[in-house]
Amino acid sequence: MISPEISLKNDFAYYVLKLDNGISVVRDRAYKLIIQNLDQDFNWSIEKNIELKGKKWRIIEVYSHHNNIGVLYATKLKSETVILYAIYDHNGIFISEKQLLNSYDVELPLDVNLKSSDDLNWVSLIFKDRKQEKWMCLYNRGQDSLYYTVKADSLFHFDAHSVQDVLLNNNGDFYILGPNVEQERQVKNKDFHIYGINHMGQLILDKKLQLVEKDIYDCVLMYQDSFSKLLLVGIYKEKMNGGPKGYLVQNVLEDDQIVFIEFNENLIKSLTGKTKKSGMSDVNLKIKNIQMMVDGSWLMFLENSRELSRKPYFNSTQDNTGFGPMKWVDYYYDDILVSCIDSNNSLIWEQVLPKKQYSQDDEGLFSSFFVMANTSFLRIIFNDEIKNESTVSEYILRSDGRFIRKSVLNTSYKNLNLRIPDAFQKDASTLIIPSESNGKMNLVQIILD
Image 1 (cartoon, one colour):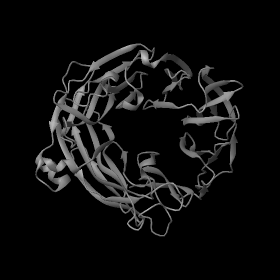
Image 2 (cartoon, rainbow, N blue to C red):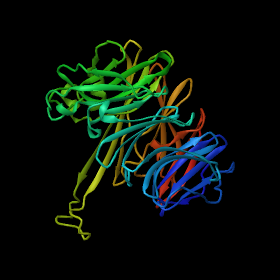
Image 3 (cartoon, one colour):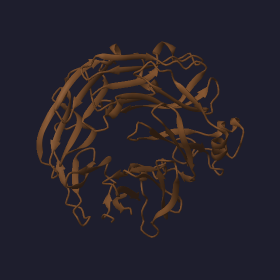
Image 4 (cartoon, rainbow, N blue to C red):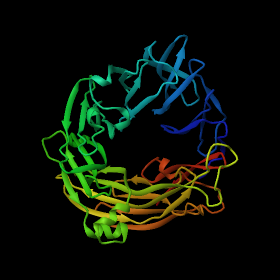
């Protein structure tokens, strides 16, 4: 099913929300916020305004709030800058609000680093005041409770630009990973730490990572609620060597050492076509998704992706705009590497799912993939032909690593450009995907067998 088009030419941003009774789109036009709902026939309702406080505001995030809409935004009221979380019904009618920040010491435009928990109940905000001091607050949307507002620099000791990853779990515990400030300039021996703060704003973890002669290539923090485990997972490289070398995993809350699992030759050959380990220097792996399984094992999805800037061969000087040399940006999103690690931090299996995606000057919006889960298997959905805009394909992946590849949809002559990484799963077999073309947007609903 394909919705009618919505013009985005006057929109700053939009948010697609799954409410209890359907799908809504909240559109930020910078000077006003509007909402439209999809009916059962996949037609749009008329536009309705959402009235925000103040004449100058900045949307931080928009959430589904059961069958209502939660808008987190900063605004200026008289001489004060405040952060509000306001709830509206699906017709844009105001219900209630909570003030999270009321201070003369911050000013719009307010630069906020936001992190939400997996269940979206907990919201953490980090921002700077006029003195450039960093503050952090924690809010629970479900309880409508503000838990703390504290100085972040007193809790952890590295700058925002150097942070490797942050995690906010469903208990309200906040974890952050990065190198110490005083060691950021020491390239050879960066000292990484993980800090943890509980929902009362108290420091509960300060742990140094023992990397020895290795370094982090890419990693994330993940929390297993069923086992109360905080894991550091990712890939590592050798010191002074840019190519990925293998997997790393550590149970952070225990005294376990980091486990390093080196890539085997078969995997290297599948990714690079070469048998030598030096071939991995041309691979650029990024962690894109983590899927947890009920037995405590988990799957890590990595993608070989890169972007290249180049000048057109016919442009030897400057373009007519006067902004400097014109450049093309090429986006490559290639093979997916899926790795299964058990609860004892041992590799069970790994698979390379081949794909080739290339696009130019589109920010890579239509590349990469989406992982759709049910109790039996995973679907990895992706645009198979970015340039020709004609085929959507999938890998069906079972828990033992076996997979098959199938075509899902032919979009020829439908004028669809599916932003598959921005899809969301409506239920076990239904996917909602935004499509953008020539400044217009559709929502596309796909029901998979």
